[in-house]
Length: 247
Image 1 (cartoon, rainbow, N blue to C red):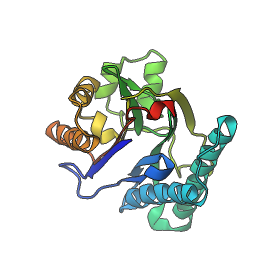
Image 2 (image 1 turned 180 degrees about the vertical axis):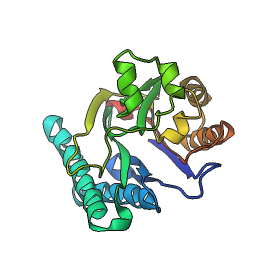
Image 3 (image 1 turned 90 degrees about the vertical axis):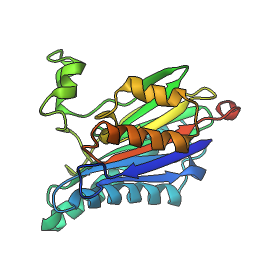
Image 4 (image 1 turned 120 degrees about the vertical axis):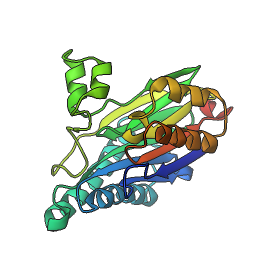
């Protein structure tokens, strides 16, 4: 498994409210994008990823299958949600803070993705980039209802309005996706600072170059900054190397 990761505050933000965690030995990768004033977004995202990371370190998901695996990650996300929500209720300076979060778990050919909010997971393989997650946003709800097109959603004034987040309410129900990976497939986790500036065709083009995941992460961040860098940018890239998908 080839793993790369990179975060950058972008060109227009004074601080970085994104957070990420890589637990390579456990096959778990996490990206979060915090929201809230007075640096609370930064606190929310870091708290959430640390809670999930600690959950994984206390008991690895390796060997779990089916319903037990899904319930494991739902429990991890709900634990992070409780922690962020409790902090937001307990401390007035953190009131209203929340965070998106996307988690990928890879074991052999199996990929499980768990997400809340609009941080995304993609899979690149066979020259095609596929979005795995579905954004929990106001504009995505409009797209699903046929009110606006995907192109209109990209320019909509409320495109950053999320409808579900870690810590926003006292409980949360994450989306779970499961699929099989092939040798050479790449998994991309990212906050909206990437896909808000770089279209999917250009993202796919950078993966098509066949560089290391570290180099690909750096090129993705550079492309987002070249596109305007209006938000924090965080990416994790994981490539399934030959033979791993058959384990």
